[in-house]
Structures are given as structure tokens and as C-alpha cells.
Image (cartoon, rainbow over all chains, first blue to last red; front, side, top):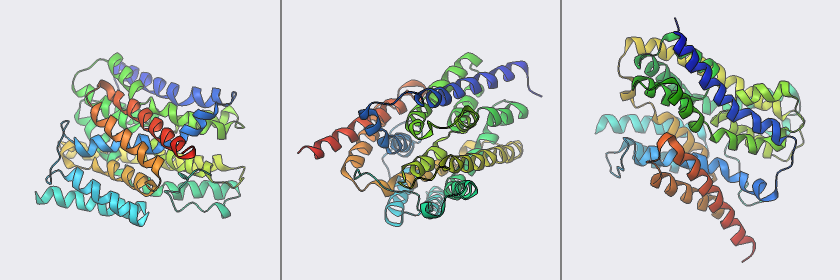
Length: 107
Length: 248
């Protein structure tokens, strides 16, 4: 069973998350955005992805770890090469994950 | 057409997607690799959450009503650390702020939709669906049903997230210390697979270099605030690089 405190927590998290996702979608529909904003938007996907990936690869435990024993870094770079050359997302995930688990087990 | 135009997801066939049902299934299909990448992430969340002291019901409710993976992880960690509800809710808000950037990007394409579409699609907006839906909207064909593509992608991601959370809840009760499994790499490799094929134009490379450098420098900021700032830095660098090329 959920405690009252947990119910409050989940309701609060649900509310703030929805309030980040929905209002812009609902309001921007009514105004037109300035040209520079529209031009910049195509860079949001690569920028967000990079901002998530780079610290996860280079600082998996919270501090900088540039080392051959860092499986996140080694498998991450290899996955990047595979994805760049094949453009195949599913293949990248399967090979990258396999390499990551092997590397961790090996070291 | 800007030079940054590229398709990271090759499974979207825009010539054959003119009906609602076809758009829906194309959305499901395009999201499939991302669902594969999200499976371990969902399982770890379920396992981690029940091990961090959340009840089974609260863990399942979080996936059902919040539906935002990284903030759910952070919340589980904070619960384990004994943080209060207010702090966790505030952190959730900050961690999920990037979704407003997604809304800004998609909104111009969704102007014509009534609230009965906007409300559920907003609730279902995730990193993964944003990535494939944004690509679908950028394709030049004038299909009037691209929101059905969004719906297919969203429902697939949502269903998978609920299933994986439950699997994780049961696995977590049987096997302790889920954080050490190393499956968190699945999300990283999924995002690498989305990003790398696009690194073929100067402005995108500039964007990625700036975002990566900023993310490393700002990694110490609390509540993943560095993620937002680094994203904005990447967008600015991409725009500058593009402008520099347009007027040499």
C-alpha cells in the first residue's frame, strides 16, 4: 500500500512534470515564434543528447575518468563509430551493450 | 534546406504514411530501437525504487503518472537518501525542464490540434518520442496525420515503461543492488546511436563540441542544471557556426 506521504510525492512530481510539458505546447500554438528561435530549434536534439552522453561516458562515477578501463568510455566511443558508419540504431544498441558488458567483465 | 538536415532514424518511410493507422504504426516502428534501449532502464528503475524504500504501489504509480525516466531515478535516489517530498518535487521540476525545450520545438507543428490531443501527447512527451517525432515533423511531405505518428510512438513507449517497471519491481525484490548491474549504459548507447549519424555537418559538430564541453564543466551543478545550460550552449554554438558559414 502507498502511504499518504508517497501519494503526495507522486502527485507533486506528476503535476510539475506535466506543467513543464504541456503549457508551452498549448500556448505556443497561439503565437508565432521569432525566426532565431525557429532556426535554433534544430540544434536542440543533438545538444541535449550530447549533454546527457558526455558526462555519462567520461564521469560515470561522478569524477573524470579518462581510462581504458572505463567501460562507459570505451564502449561509448565504439558505439559512436558503429552508429556513424552504419546509421543503424538497433545494431548500435545491441553491439554497444554487448561490448560494454564484455569490457566490464574483462577488466 | 539547412545542411544539418538529416535522418537518424531510417525506418520512417514518408511516402507510404498517409492514413491515420499507417502513421500510428510508423510511429511504433520508428520507436522500436528506442524502446529496446529503454527496457533495461525501466527494469533498473523498478528494482532501484523498491530497494530505495518506496512501496511497490508508489513505484508503479510514479511510472504511470509521472512517466519521466531520469527524474524517477533521481527521485528514487533522493528517497533512499531520506530527502523530503518538497525537495524531490523541486528536483523533478528542474530535471524535467528540458521537456519545455521539446514542447517549443514541436509546438509550431501542432498548432492545429485541439486540447484533447495536446494534453495526452504532452503527458507522453519523452526524450525518445521527441527525437523520432521531431524527425517525422521535419519531413517535407504534407501528411495531415503526423500526430498519429506521435501517438503511436508515445503509447509504445508508455506501455513498455509500465511493463519494465513491474519486471524491475519483481526482479528488485529477488536480486539486491540493481545499480551495480551496469545496465544504465543502455540509455547512453541509445542516445549515442541517435546522435552519431548526424555528425556530418559543421554546425552540428560545433553544437556537439560546445554542449559536451559545457556539460563536463558544469557537471558539478546541482539537480542536473548543467544539462539545461549545456544544451543552450550547444544550440548557440550551432547557430553561430551556421551564421558564420552563411556570410563568409
